[in-house]
Length: 60
Image (tube, rainbow, N blue to C red; front, side, top):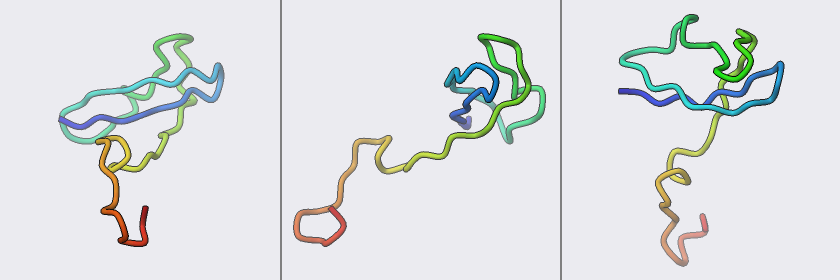
């Protein structure tokens, strides 16, 4: 199961889509305004899990 974070370019609504496999055109519909002009919002995988770099690693 994959989770995609999407943003509607029409109304600005941010939402998640849960799909088996890959994101398809039918999944790219804003639940607020029904627009199909949406884009994928990219975020850090580690940030979403609440992970952080070890102290002193130079990445924190």
